[in-house]
Length: 312
Image 1 (tube, one colour):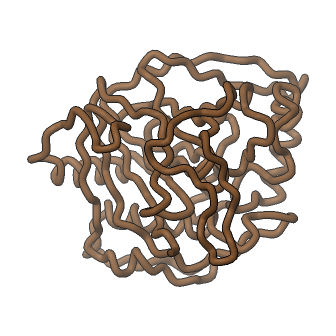
Image 2 (cartoon, helix red, strand yellow):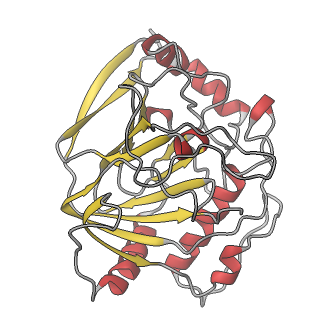
């Protein structure tokens, strides 16, 4: 996970948000910066889109982030159009083999230039990706998102000790588009650690929603001497070990990223339509928290999911 720029972190502290969150739940981890460095179009994660009031003790706030407005309306339309074209002949399914999701359709969103997308080279901040006019817009969005994730959410130190994480080459699995009907459900689960790697990320389209993270019954102990994951929960192991939870507000056009603790040790699920998300607004003049609820009516939801390959 990347480390925030010092200027953004300073602004976060000046606004009183750090004090607000600590007052609400002083137990959670504050040893790492929360927001991430700017990439290309100044895309920042926003701590207001996480509700930490009920966060379990020791929750790593760097492991779950939301980037509101990550894609533009035009980019959103290109993703929706491409996904709809590929989903045209598919019917909504009543259930998945692991019983995690109902009322959904799913299709692979491979890009015309998947070779480029799967092996992104390291480059300077000012370098630009291939701007070939022949590449459709949806593919450019996929490439740019992967570049952003590789730069900001993979690194040698995961942002520890105040050092900006160094990006590395990342091999990506093909993106998947998941079309969830208004009545569909996504139950608590941990994405398989056998088939995907360090992060689970998604661009949210068509409808706002709330994602809830709960501690899984299995704890993630990191890696053993052979680099294999130890104690990672597997898909379908949905039992939670405490009543604590963290809510993420996922508006249309946003990108969420789960890594580390949230990726391996917490289940994620979508709350039903009509659920409420509480924002903790901060008044700079008084640095006081004022909870505000927003009822989120979820309709049909399209998400474009990004996963990296599991290092065997």
